[in-house]
Length: 408
Ligand SMILES: [Zn+2]
Image (tube, rainbow, N blue to C red; front, side, top):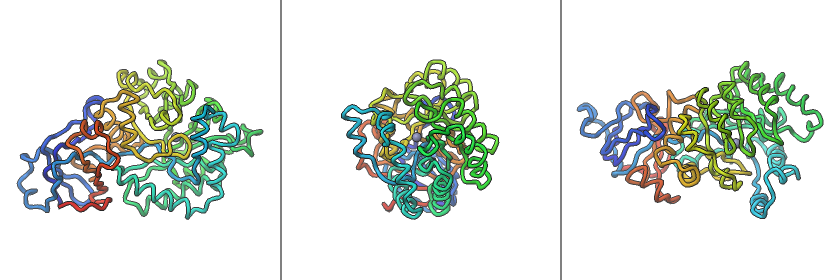
């Protein structure tokens, strides 16, 4: 039963209280047994029997819960650096998409890639995420669009989940209507609802069903049909909502009791009110807002209204080609005016809620998974103020150290 001593600040991130309340403990200790936390609190209060256990020295550093990246498109092939430059020169996301770039281009490359190549790249990304403190990752399909490739992506996630120590949560994403079905949209949505989504649920390949509700992707009515099919099959709803325009996606998410509504750069005051009533988590993706040069999600309005706000990377080859969740936290502060504490809560216990795993992970409390990260900073404010991509982060998942640095 190891005990971690000499913790400068322990950010427990318990769920109670508002977004800004992360329940820190200075001069703390943390004990775990196997994969489960058994004690967390001020070091002077450490129970006597734990003094005799194996001890590790945190060196006065900050300790946070293992970060939860609650929105990623982890498995895909190819990059789109040239589109990054085209957007910087003035072309819009939708213009590039309509010219055969965007999602369609990644779909072509992902369909052509072998499962082995996709798996290797996804696991390398997960390893890199571990070095940034991430222990739980939500992974979406959505770069196949046909049955064969969507199933291939979800099976890759299942294989990785069985071999990696990080916790993976899998989502089927209805991302776009593929070009071969564009003339028969209704038939494609019908096939999703009658065939693919029930099959994915039957084979336990996903826990969530997500849909991109946007001009150029799916309408509100199509999104509703897809999400309701998912719910009838046992898949909880998530929505890519109000990213490029106020399309009513947030209100749809609220009406269906979705676990999260993600993006929300263009959410209306009415959408905010609906999310507050439904208890749906609003997931912000500030890397995507920055890359696309969009106004950020109005996080302050959401938090002030009492909506829990998550923070995630949206890791994908188009709008968010970075897997760095601490970078997203820093952008949540600088672009969305969230405080460091609010941002951290958004990538821990609030993000866990957006993935339906808040009972198991997301905070440092007895009974929860021993998933935590030692950050080379004195406290949360110091960490996100002096954001240092080279700052060392030692990450543990299920009581096992994932990253290589050896503690004394
Ligand atoms: Zn996304």
